[in-house]
Length: 170
Ligand code: S3P
Image (tube, rainbow, N blue to C red; front, side, top):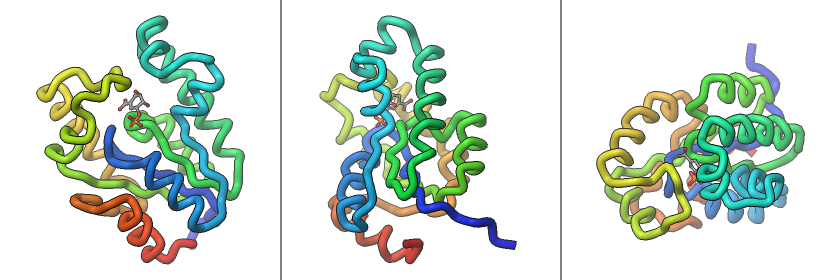
């Protein structure tokens, strides 16, 4: 029996996959509120993600991220852009599935992700090419568990939005 779907779309994928940009455009297109999980965390902590990592470390960030995820998942309808690591933590996957929304993985090649992230220093999980590639490989099996995969390679944000609208999940 198909489970009941709530009107929540979670965009997931690696750093630089376009979750925030596409999410904001998609939300405007369908007239739903847009929630950026990283921005929610920053507002709640009164600090940038990089500062949170520097001051209190990743484990604390992940706790705050989990709490923020639970909080934003109460909003319906909503387009929610997750952080690159959010979906890869098992407790979070359970939380998202229990929330009853739909998950969409914005898939993109390592080369393009690197091009988009190199030179931008607000991502504490982006240290160097080798660790970036290793982290992507480690996370791919998790991303593959999303309800839908949208290939974003070479696509402008609006084209990605069109692809999502073509999934006919709205
Ligand atoms: C992270 C990705 C970031 C942010 C934090 C951790 C990760 O979000 O949540 O720096 O673990 O990949 P973006 O994917 O929006 O950059």
